[in-house]
Image (cartoon, rainbow over all chains, first blue to last red):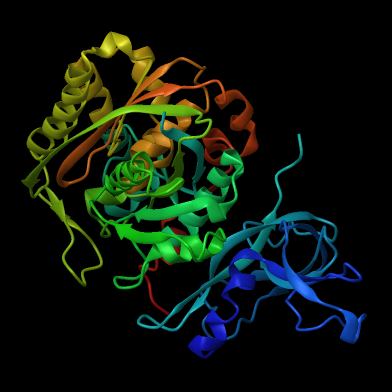
Length: 134
Length: 345
């Protein structure tokens, strides 16, 4: 990934900042440039997502791409956030045997990857099982 | 009066037992455990580092402070394991908690006391009126060379403190520091692991600085050990904080509550301030706390704190230290070297 391509998205990657349409109130993540429902009359503003949601589906990666050898096996999931948007994310701090569809999860700040020993470190959101509500 | 308006911690969930490390290096696990008074230590996951730990702790501190991150005017992160040598950890934290762009930020380094040095700096900014709130963090994924005695203790974890004037959960009455050039422990540029003076550095380094700072603070306030409900010290192992506390005249009931090194190891810049968080997790309004850090090289910062009424309503807003300590997964030495990147593929 080019360095500017990473830092342009830092707000959304670090802090789950998406967009909300002022006219129809739809919330988008990753951020969009215009509202597909309202088109020209829509106006988007920053919207900070709380980072709570549940697992919609998942897969377990046992044959990882380059750079992820040390992490495998790991879980990639689609998480539906409380506010509605769905995102693809790694699910960490969960054993591959304990993950299930519908599992409540919360966002966590982790390293996503790094460009070797001397390159940039890419940080961003991942999700982990949420503690049980008391 | 200025004080802590929010605090938060983070401890990674992986643990390795002292016996497991001893098994690999042919040492007697029981005697190492008895000598260091450490049963297990916290190990950061493969995707965690001082920056991710700092962010998690800062988010917990913000939950308790109940302020907008945009009101934070300064972020200082103390660590001896900053992920970059050049490029601040503090900017990563600032962006991740959405405090950017109107603030000042920098990284601090002073072995294990960089976190309390950061607390003093933001306290001064708040006192002078330069910022409304300041965020100080101590966070580390400490390094210990394979086979070095440090490997039994060097752990991962961190704590974050938001300091301000409005409705603090604990006021900071005074702070006092004691600093000399004492080379007991160091890591040279480009070196992956620190070196140390080994035995006999305890007395001229840890004990001299910690007791001088604690005494200096108490003398300046005209107070003695009996005036504090809790005393928290830097915890490189289980022995040092207990010995220095007794030497200073503190009783068991005053210092045991702040000790957590036996269950998570030495979290370096996070060590004494995680101990403070553990005490804040149980303290009642009106109780008084003495905090004294230690950083090799060497220096100690001492603080006198008074717990305020708002502790009761703010405490439940983020996880407690015990929540993180009890959420754990044991790993063996093989997984440990993989997580700590001591093997390369």
